[in-house]
Image 1 (tube, helix red, strand yellow):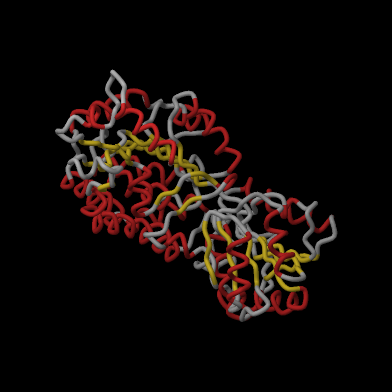
Image 2 (spheres, rainbow, N blue to C red):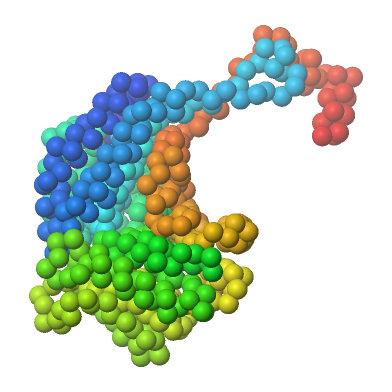
Length: 472
């Protein structure tokens, strides 16, 4: 087993010896990270597809390769500005007397990254962009569910980086448990909420600051003013990408009671147009493994048993039961109720419950009685209604008139709220997450303590200072 403690010690020693970490060093690491992904894009696509059973090559190129290069390029472009000290005002009258204050963003040291299986390249590299931009070194734990991708990362990281810059750790849940218990200077975990709780417990023993990127049931609220054809196409695209195995996938839809039938028809039409066949369709991704396929199958059966109407979108009437494949068609769950598992747990697959609402406040109440989601999606042209949804709900992020897209905006913070996560990264927010904001105060040459009455023996000056403080 990899001696993770030895790697961490070596990284921290190298980091301390190197300080301060120059812009040139940071840019060089970003450049090598980009080269590692770009030069080996085809191999990454093959590895990810092997891990999934089948994964669309074009999808991997967009969501794992392109989406990994974008944050690196963004960080490199803006690094100069991010590294500048942030000047802050000082209280009257210190500024007049020559005192100065500023914030310097220092690297924290060694950052631990725990990546999930659903986007196994992007969700390791995207945090790494912020980690390297901030001047840190990194140890990254890959998912045991994507062993081919993990093995490729181990091979390539050793070729592009010294182990004291970037180290890849692979292994099962026990390795992950040991990894999360290491005394990192910061730890970022992307994955399920239940595992996030264990990560937080493990990190607490070391007082390691943690960023948790979790999930939850991200709702779609379809306003009465929404264009149903356009909205349902966009929801379907987001739901069926990666076969719904996205932390930000639209998890359930809230639709006006009068529009439910049109919405179901719109979803069916959109799914059929994008995926006229499924089993042999190279564009459509498989469910990651047998356990998750069985979980989804069981949840669909649970919904049926509790009174749901489940509509399977299978345009070519293919025989999934006898196919040697984990591909699963889109299942629309109508009449979804709170006692069904699909309305209690994050679905993470091609299953879409639809619930009716009467009036926007009813839709908002349905969202708010659940845990705060990672994403929230509203479709509609009614500005007052849109504002009410934004004001009366809490979620990690929001996309209006589409789904998922806020995650791809490099200058927007990406993170959750409550059970959907804590902390944020991407762009300058990632740079600051992986930096220590160090306060610096430079005192005036004058005897400020005496002028302010801070220096004993206390007298009239002290009395004036106290009186001013009491006035606020």
